[in-house]
Every structure is written in C-alpha cells, then in structure tokens.
Amino acid sequence: MAAGAEYGLKKIVWQRIKDTLIADCRKSEVWKILILDRFTTRLLSSCCKMSNLMSEGITIVEDLHKNREPVLEMKAIYFMRPTAECIDAFINDFKPKPKYKAAYVFFTDYCPDDLFDKMKKNCAKHIKVCKEINISFLPLEAQVFICENTEAFKSIYTPSSQDRDQTLETIANQIVTLCATLEEYPGVRYKKDSALGSKLAELVDNKLAQHYELDDNSKKKDKTPAQLLIVDRALDPVSPILHELTYQAMAYDLIPIKDNTYEYKVKDGSKKEALLNEEDELWVKLRHMHIAEVTEQIPKLVKEISAGREEKKQADGKITIGGLSQLMKKMPGFRKQMTQKTVHISLAEDLMNHYQKNVEKLCKAEQDLAVGADAEGQKVKDPMRTLLPVLLHPHDTTDKIRAVLLYIFSLNGTTAENLNKLIQHVKIEDESGYILNWKHLGVPILSTPSMFSFRKPSRRDRSDKETYNVSRWTPVIKDIMEDAVENKLEVKDWPYQSECPSVWNGSRAVSLFPVSARQKHKGSSPDDLRSGSRLIIFVLGGVCYSEMRCAYEVTHANKSCEVIIGSTHILTPRGLLEDIYKLGKQPMESFNIEEKP
Image (cartoon, rainbow, N blue to C red; front, side, top):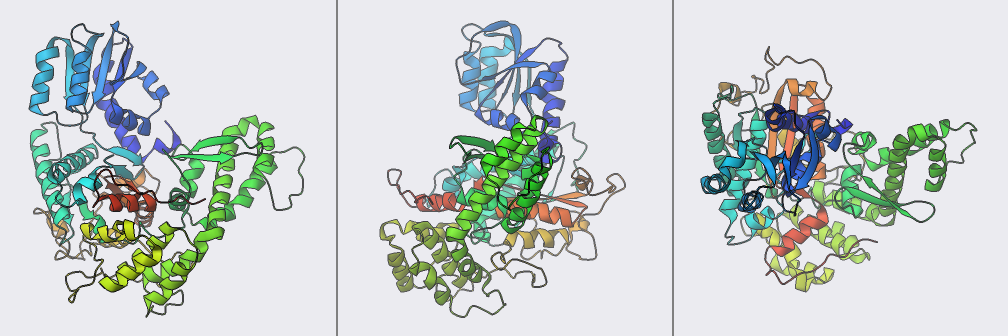
C-alpha cells in the first residue's frame, strides 16, 4: 500500500473492500475481471493501486460504460452504484449474449427494489453473488471524506429547488455508509436554527437506526461512543473566502490545480506534472504548515540534496530547478524522493511569488475584517476604513469581491445604499449575485432593524497562541471540534436528534470520549489515534482546506479522539463564488471569474 493509505479512512475502506468484495471472490482461484463505474473507479483509486488488485487475483480493470470485448472464460466482478444507468449497462453485458462466464455484483449501497427486480428478471442465472457493501463516500484523505456531489450545493441552496429533499436523502444514505464502514453508531447532533442541518440530522438518525436493525451481522446495535455533528455552510462564511496561508489551502486557492495535479516548468522550459496526494510523504508533512514555515524548509531540502553529491560546492543561497534536475541524474537511487522535493520547492516558490506580488497586500485587511481587531488586538471600529485601501488598489475583481464579502460578514449585513455603492465600486453591477446570493445560504447581506435573529457565535480566546499577523483567523469549526471533544457543546445550541447514552448528557465532569478497556490507548501514531473515540463532522454545502486542517490539528492535540470531517465536496474560494453566483441564475447565464496571472 502507498504510504498515505497505510492509515486512516483509506486503509479502513480498502480493508472493507478486501473483506467483502475480494474475500467473496477469492474462493475461486481463477483470475477475474473487475468492472467499475465512474464513482467506484475514483473510490478504488483513492485507496489502492493496481498492484494491490493484482495480488488479490484481479488481472483486468474495465469501465462499465465503455464497449468491451467478451471474455467468456473469465468471471467478472461488478462494483457499482445502484443506479438505473449502471443496472442497464450491466444487463447489456448479458443480453442478448453474455460477455463473461459469471457475474459477482457488489453495490456501493442499498439497491432500490425496482432496479433489483429488473436485474434479477434479466440476468438471474448469470449472477453468482449480489451484495451491498455500504461504501458510497470517497475517502479523500486519512481524516477527510466527501460525497462526490458537486451538484448538491445547487440542489440544496437554489430558491424553490425541486430536488432538495432527494439530495438530502442521498447525502444521508452516504453518511450512513461512512458510519457503517467505521462500525460506528453515533449520537447525531445539529446546529440549532439550521433548518437544513435539522432535516439532514433526522434523516441520518432514522437511516442509522434502520441500518443497524437490518444488519443481522452487526455487533454494534447499541450507540457507540462517537458523535456526528451536522452543520451547514452558513455557520462560517468567512473561512472559505479568506486568503489562507497554509500550504495546501494556499496552493488550491492561488495555483490552477486540477484533479490534484500541479504543473510546473523545469529549466529547459518543458512542463512536468506532479500529483499532490498522500502518496507523497513530503506533501503530507508540509500540507498544513504555514507558507513561512514551508519556505524555511527549502534550504534544508536543498542541503539534503546537495549532500548526495561527491563534490560539494559552496552554495550561494540560491538554487535553480534546473540545478536540482542535474543533481537528480547523479542520484538515481533517490530519484523519487528528490523529485518530490523538487516539486515542493517549485510549488513553494510559485506561492511566495503570488504572495509577494498580490496576496500580502490583501492579508492584513482581510484578517482585520475577519477577526474584528488588528494585529495589536485593537478593535476595528470602522470596517470601511479597513476595506477602502483594497478597493482603491488595482487588485483583480475576485479579490475585491472577497474583501467586500468579509466587510459585510463583519457587520452581519449592510444597508442597501451602502451595498449598491460597493457593487458599483467593484464594477459588478451585472454580476451582483456573487454578493447578493449569499442570502440563499442564510448569511445576512442586508442589515435589518433587528439583527437578534442572527448572532455570531462566541469565539474561543486564542490570544495566548502565537500566530502570524497575516494568519490570525481560526475557522469556526475548530472551536466546535474542541468544544465537542471537551464536552462543552451546549445542548440548547446543539440539540440531539435522538436520545443518547448518559455519557453525552452535557456534564463537563464526564469525558465525552472515554477509553474503554477494549479500546485502550496505546500511543499517538495515526493508527493508535483510532483507539479512542471518534468525532465525525459533516459540513453541508462544501468544506474548505483550512477546515480540513483543523480536523488533524484537534486530533493531534487530543490523542484519544480522532476527528473526521466530511462534506458534499471540497471548496476553493473561486469555486465557491461561482457556485454562489449560479444560485440565482438561469442555466444560460454565465460569468467567468478572471484567473490570477
């Protein structure tokens, strides 16, 4: 297994697949074909390699939706979502003539009766096994999962959406498969006054109860010492808009990274690509560091590379990517490791160039507006004075929109007159939806005579923590994680969806995450962190990279509790602004946010 998949969600998912899908097929010694749909292709890619599948007797991996040559002497394993599209493709493989000797069918989750009956009617004699293995989420990182549903944002937040209820139903099913994979039956809580959170919590709680009633093999029908907190995007509109300066978040904000692929240039002008994922141990080590700390690492990395040379030369403090390439050729044994270092030196340089050129000028104003105080702790009395320098500077339109939003969020909404002036100043009169459509999320954009209906959550005092002046903001979700772990979440603000064991009664004297004798704590390695209990947080409407980082930080600080965070999809600032803009628009209308140079 890859280094990044040796622990956490990815390891658990791969083990589950081996224990079900592969174990059932291993009884036959014959090599088999594995047929996947688009989702299960991504699922398997996230937690294993082709070599892992080969060692389990799978010799070929095929796409369910593409034309394939018949291989009548081989048995086929179908791993797919229980959708009409997948069922029809499966039936076409066996009618009028079968393409394979037999079919072993595994669904990611519950197959609706009508689809099951259709499949049974057409292909019953060819099906040797048919099971639901309850994995309909993607393990994106060791402690992060997504539902892989980018359309969910539109379905949930579009006014008078026709498919909101169906979308919530689907998401609830996916969350239940996560809990089943983790063998958890958690207490479910939601943020008070969140209608969407309340609805989703009810769906999840009911489906969990149904799952553990139906699952005859389950040994965990009683609630486990875990909690599932459900929040929606309105809880914290600031974090996904702010310029975040930790390595991973900054990279996905400022660099055009698609499918986790970073493109960079080498000395001869040619382009190379690098995958930013948990296969890269250096990426795992660096991703949550502040960019200032990452850049401090560069001289050390260069020194390590230089140490491998037979002839050491005195470096003048500067080294080019081309120079590193020459060094690599002389050290073939360390090629992979050196490539990773070269990639991160290049990426860090790219990020620092963006920072010095543009972002640095924005950060102080953004932080002052988000935190409500300057670096010296003095309260910002007039947010407009903080905003004006950003509006007057020739920043690109997107950055000005982000600053205007932070200004509005800081005031819990502004007047219609002021809002119109801001929209005119940024010159987005025809694209005002970038700002106005936040109201569909329940975020106040226009102030009202009484703002008692929307109060900002009280924040933890972190004044004793050492931070960079340009990175003083802490995502709201981190406060919630820490309060949950310490059993400080007030029931009046975070009601339970159903009755829970007394350990969750809100008493601060009782540890929320007791360590049982069966689960005794052994240490602080990634695997050992699972020996305590779990806090699962689901953010409806997208989760940003800074919030993902918080799950790791809180886990590291509380050794006996693992925090897992998940969402419908991953947010970047520009992607979120586009999603917001489209909420109030017809399909034909579009506007592209200009890219940074």
